[in-house]
Image 1 (cartoon, helix red, strand yellow):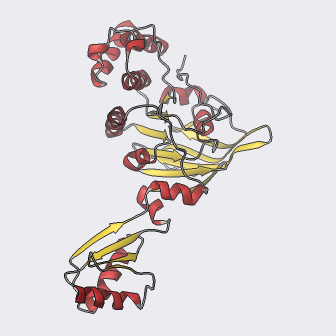
Image 2 (image 1 turned 45 degrees about the vertical axis):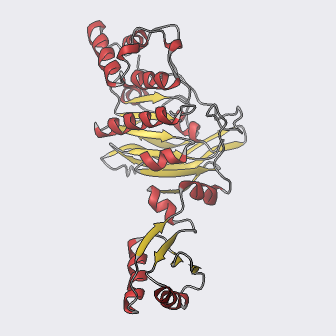
Image 3 (image 1 turned 90 degrees about the vertical axis):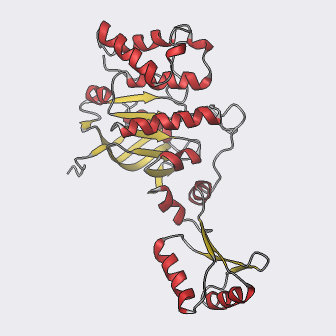
Length: 343
């Protein structure tokens, strides 16, 4: 029985894939609402790109079912392709053509017709701030410009859902933030984004929901804040007006929470907390009952690096100066960079 909600953009149940005797995806379930950003995180080899390649019809699954924009992945692959756009980890643009020629080529592949295709190309060049470079060969573009052109090529078909497989790999911080603004703008226009990334900060800033994939299984899913609250290390820092107030607070809280950390120089206490409203209300309630006034309060929660380490047992891969993971190696997870078009 299909339990897919009506407003779901991407639905998968029990999705499985193996290469030889290695299970890359081991029965994952997905439910991505329309008009949201969903981010899939995981260490190298976890199955992120395999999931993208299956959901974009590039390779078949070994088991399970999936529907993209309401279309069955197996029964209606052409319908799926008409509804989606794909931007791989590496730019799929022709360096010998100009930016405008690349877009016109993509428009021709989508059979938009000569006049509509050229109009769409010009609109996207303006939208992605590439007008001044439109008639230059792409091999003269910077990395950020190439990625913007790559996104523009994906948008030619006016997709409902866009799969972005590590779209900011190798970009400098300014270009990366420009890409974030582009992604936010797409979502504001109702597009659904399925994002894989090696940058945890990126998922934190962009994603409405995040799933962590490890060993072919989804080990956690939720908003960034929900995931952070699952990891120990969160605390509330309380500052007081004088040493007497600090002493009173330490006695009050220490009887309940023996691992309260004290900083006499800063007149502050550090109290373990998940940062949630309920726990904050309870903490302040204990102090209010004891007639202790708090001067300042700040909440500190673990970041997604802490979440990643706790859930996968290892830190997110470090990156070299070229933006690629230092420990990246070719394997079955090497992304397919070609565009998906319906012919």
